[in-house]
Image 1 (tube, one colour):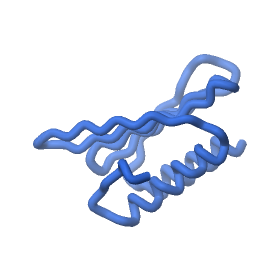
Image 2: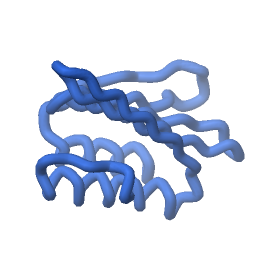
Image 3: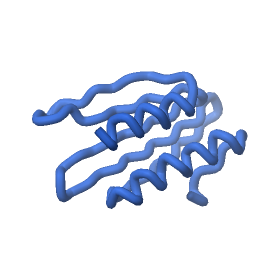
Image 4: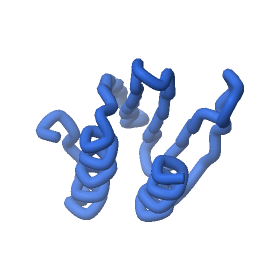
Length: 97
């Protein structure tokens, strides 16, 4: 993931691992970066058109918002984390359930 530049290499490596989990499960992705004077935002959207699932990861400075699809409906659950390792665990739980 050469498009994701972050000040901490640990965060960069975990995001690379999250990215690889989705790519290995045949998800496509889109990336958007918004940079302003006060904040640094990254949007990662992973989708699988075959099973119609969409996962969103929104990073705002050091706060991580993750949206996951709820099973058998068209709704999403969004939660907030302050640690990238928790995001990684959360994605693993929901992707392989």
